[in-house]
Image (cartoon, rainbow, N blue to C red; front, side, top):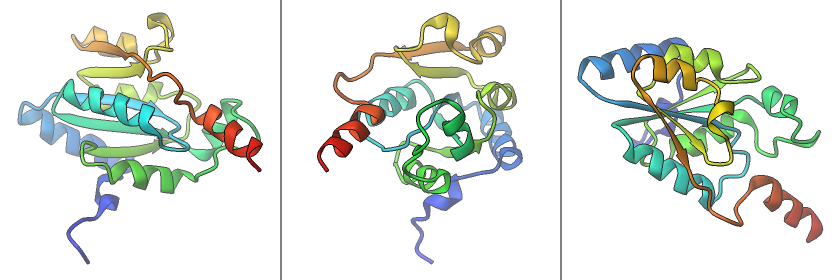
Length: 164
């Protein structure tokens, strides 16, 4: 098996918590973000680059297929399945760990991960960012990253469907 294996960065929650405990013991700052990442695009990459720059380890929570559908993104979403989305994100150089969460929000995941920095797109107002209270309570910070105009998975899917 080749040494490049993104699958090793996709962890179930218990394994992720253990890995983060070891990282924290080494003094590493943990950054967390989450999303559907249904069709990976440059807007995602920009957000992830900014997130990685905010700490030492970047952890991504990926919505499960069921939770994507529960968000009301449409009956044909996600386009790409949860395992494939997780693998694609894990293949990115700056991503340290990926985990899939099945709940409608990442609240439980954030409570377990206990990140030092929570990153969301600036389309989320401060009061709507799930887990912000958990992060701030332990002295962490919430970073809202400006979105790249013209990049949206929903918009991309709409354009693809119109092109047919």
